[in-house]
Structures are given as structure tokens and as C-alpha cells.
Length: 371
Image (tube, rainbow, N blue to C red):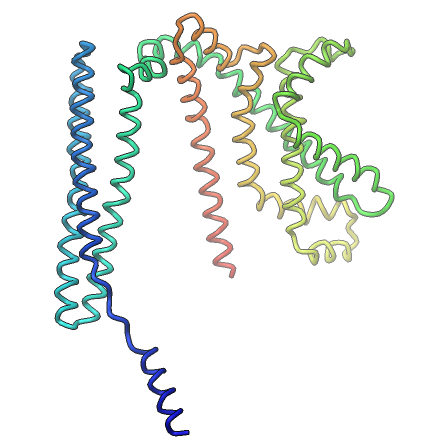
């Protein structure tokens, strides 16, 4: 028994013994080499870009200065590379002196500098690859997609048409918020008498979530007009496109509403009903206000998708930004105007995306504080 106890004690002692830290020197030198290669590649690409500008007789002093400044900024990448090697040397010296604590601290710091180098080097390499792509094939890519004179010339024309996309998006968002809530409540109506309504709401959500938005727009905008329905046949194409987008995104938003409503604990509903509130009163005063606060981020994500899908209205002949840019591009045999449209959509979408991130962070902080 004493032998077994001694063996178990030795095993416990081995488990408690601190492991010796690994030497980060090799990792540091590899990251340093990658950093040096990234800086060297940067100056090579800058020299190549300046050569392309000289070949095409492009004398833009500010572009030349910007390239040199970019090279100098990226050369700062050498600092974490050298720092990683220096700190790794200190970690190795501490390990040689059997100072485990210092070796661990310095080793962790060295690896942090290594990851700084690798992370920024990877970003630099991706940017350099994009720059080389733009000047590939004798700057064919750059001239096709980023012809600055054509982009400036088409900007105001495209911007005026872009307000059609903005108008369609804003009106459709308001209608989708209302219609999606109606469908969600229809799917949640209790009791056997409401079963047909639940079935219809479920069928609507399944059909329009599975149907591509471009097909819905085409069928609604052209089909309803061809059917000769009173009032509808006299509506402008813009209104019909808004109706089609409302049908499509109403199905998605209804599911978001339903998920938010069902995420509210059943005790909230039980307490409200015990106080004498009806089902609809419980939804209006208790459940929906709490659910809406939870579903704002996914709702905004759906609206970002809606904003992008407004470009699909060009399929029925509406002169939106995309359609206008296609007309301009076909006249100039160049796609720079379409690039302008893409930039406008991105600029319109990024603030919404950042707002969603802020809401998610705030909700996460609130949840963690409550936990």
C-alpha cells in the first residue's frame, strides 16, 4: 500500500510540475522573414505601379506621393518583426537561466509580436495582390472597372437614379414591418379555430422564402398589369416593385418576428392572461414590446438585404441606379459606372451594418450585466 501511495504521490507531483516553456526563437525568425518579404514586396509593387504610370504617360504627383507614403507606412511592419526577435532572445536567455516565470512572460510577448507581424503581413499581401490585379494585362482591369474620368462623369446621373432605390427601400421597409408582424401573429394564433389561418400564414412564408425575389418582382410587375386588374393595372412600376419586395421580405421578417415572440418566456404570457388580458392584448402590451427589442439586429440585417435587392427592379424596366449605369456602360463600352453604383450601395449599407454591430454589442453587455 505504501508503494502505491508513493507512486500516486509521484504522479500527482508530476502533474503539478510546471512544464518548461517552448523556445519562440524559430517562430520569431519566421515571422521576421515574412515581415521583411512583405515590405520588400510592397516596394516592388510600388515601383511596378510607378512604371505603369510612366508607361501610360500618367503624371499625377499626388498619386506618386501617396504611393511613397504607403510604402513608408507599411515599412513600419519591420518594427514588430524585429521586436519579436529581440523578445524571443530574452525569453531564450531566461530559459537558459532556468527562470521559468520570465521565460513564460517573454515567450508570450514574443509570440504576440509574431502574430502582429503575421496579421499585418497577410493584410499587406492581400492589398498588394489587389493592386497587381488592377494593373494586370496592361491595366485592362483598372481601365474597365475604375476609369476615374468616366466615374466622375457618370456620378451625378447615377446618383439621381439611386434615389429611386432609396425610395423603394424606405417605403418597402415600412410596409414589411407591418405586414411581417401580421403574418407572424397569424402563425401564432392559438386554438383549433385558427388552424386554417395558421396554415395559410405558414404556406405564405414557405412560398415566398423559397421564391427568388427577382421572379416575384417580374411576376408582380408584369403579371398583374397583364391581368388587367382594376386600379392595379394603373399603378406605376415602382409601386408594383415595392409590393413585390414587401411580399418577399414580409415572409423573412415574419419569421424574425415569430422567433422574437417565441423567445419571450411563457411566464410573461401566463401572467398577462391571469390578469385578464386577451391574447391580442398580451401580444400588444407585454410580448411584442419585449420581442421587438431583441429582434432589431436581425431586422436591420434583413433591411440591408432589402436595400441591395432594390437593384433587381431593373428587370422590369425601372430606371434605378443599376439600370442607369448599364445604359451608360453600354454607350461607353466600360463598366466604371456600374462600379459607381456598387460604391453607392456599399456606402449606404456600411452605416447600417455598423449600427447593427453597435446594437449587438449593447445587447451583449446588457445580457452579461444581467447574468
